[in-house]
Image (cartoon, rainbow, N blue to C red; front, side, top):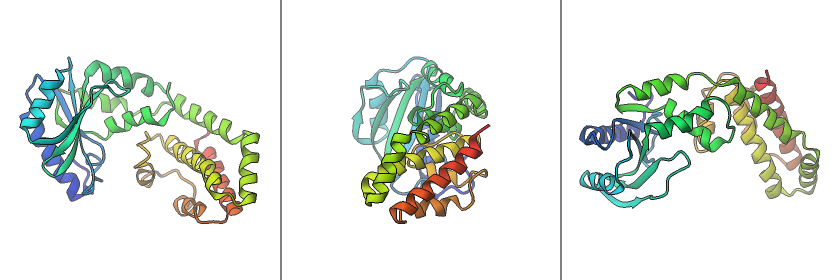
Length: 267
């Protein structure tokens, strides 16, 4: 079921995903879920329809493609190279919506999730897999998705600690800090915002950690952060001001936000 605030575009994508799930032969998928922006209820008219299919043994590429083609897929691309989590994807157009359909074995997903849930990996891109599973909407299930989602309910303290350590390493680098001060003094805004952008990205990641929430991808990080409860006062308006303030002021605003986020996330 979608969130109560789900957009009409999300509902439309859910209905298309349900049609796929009802028509999918069991040999092509044992577990199917709607994921991404539609599953969060936030899709708009330009959003993809993202559907994940899980199996014991990966079906042949031709079998996956032929079934989707029979379901109406057009202008497709069959991606032969797997993603980092060992999932295989087909993209194209289904009716009036861009489709991203990914197949993955149960074991491949569990192998990808295990180190993430243990807090062993801090890079954002692989970590977004956990949020994708946590927000997924089941379409066809044998209970695997519910078990995976139960595991995502605990945010690992080790991950929070590692993010704090990574932030300290970044922000206590005096050579880097000197470069930022020089760029601000010169008014070199383009180069300065390369650095401040990295700082603000780390700041937002710390807010997720402080709230024990898994991070979404960069496209949704600020939108979903609006639901966080443990945050600096007026953090959104202060963040927006960083991008419009004079360089010296932008640097100071950014530093204050980073310090407050670090204090919230620190044990």
